[in-house]
Length: 503
Image 1 (spheres, rainbow, N blue to C red):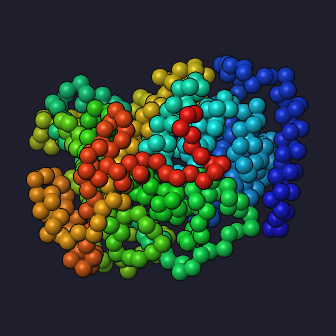
Image 2 (cartoon, rainbow, N blue to C red):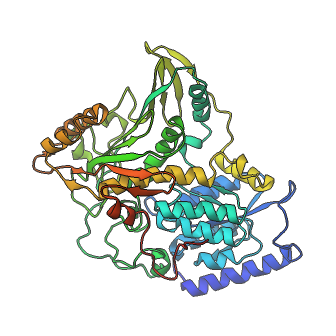
Image 3 (cartoon, one colour):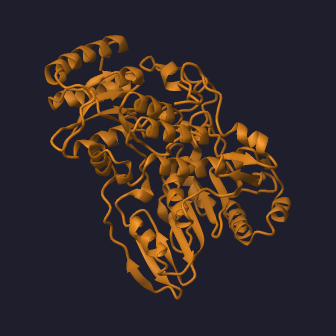
């Protein structure tokens, strides 16, 4: 297909959408309240790629189009190759939609009620804050923020401008998790003793390109980089593999961990821990990824700790022969499990436990007998968001921005410990964590897993992150290692894409 220039394409779509807006909405001031009989007009920020993976925006387009009373009236993406096909899909359905490459221009559209943010992580906070300042409500994908500072600023912006901001994730989905949480909180199984999260799922190498990749002619790389420094593209899949590079993504903790850590946090009181420590590394292959693919994080909550274990390699190296760079080819049978689950949470209580997976939440007594399987009564998160936009009550949200911020903070705490860590001999790690029964057991499993995959940690030692002390009230680190840790609470921003101290 022959593409016109980005400027020409955006000019054409802007002209068409301007005529549509003029005909339909000129008589309606922005300040109108979204009533029960009014359509909620959405903009999607970050359409995503149709090549390989990386199209969460397209998923949200399909999802929100099914919600009654919702119209998608604007799309924004910094890559014309992503934007154009979606605009054309709307045109084929005779649905008018405005197209933008710059989110700042989209937010100037007064005929827009809310935005759905599906950009890379490093853009989440700034789009959310700008949208709140522009009088738009926000549905921002996980993890809510790229760092702890940004998450707090998102909360402040939502409150200051009286905006509805939803931060969806798997623990808030319509799947029975909320009902399981309520059951445990009622004391039906006694007090919570510990929460164990596992994510044993395949994540193959993203490959090694060896040299910088050319910037596609369809991409505005300045806008793509936004708050981050402008760096050479050193990854094969530009629109997805940023997840595993620190300037833009938060690794597996931010990609999958957030779905589970949010739920773990709720079972142990809903706040943030006082201490965190990690053991991890990127094992089994050498590629352009920077984040760990095998990781243990221990969150020192009182009275019950949270232990998180990630493994992206299979049970043993025999499965590696089927691995293809950038593709998850092993399947669930190739992965380890904990109490029978490769992905999910086990909430250990005095008189039993709850096993929580993506689609099933079941309570068992101490002997392992099933007590109750929980059915969902909560609404879908996108529908819940639209209902809260109408009611103007943030309390109606199943995952308000404050909840999104606190759960994303767990992602950042684990990553900060890892990033400050050092490659450490196995014997020294054993000695360092000897007093922590849960952490020591997890490390034994960690070693056995890597050994089964042909990784000798005596030759390729794991990174032991420092035990960090965190003050949940100030959201800053204190004590030993606090200075370098606090430097990672925020980042250095590239003007004019600066997350402000005062929103």
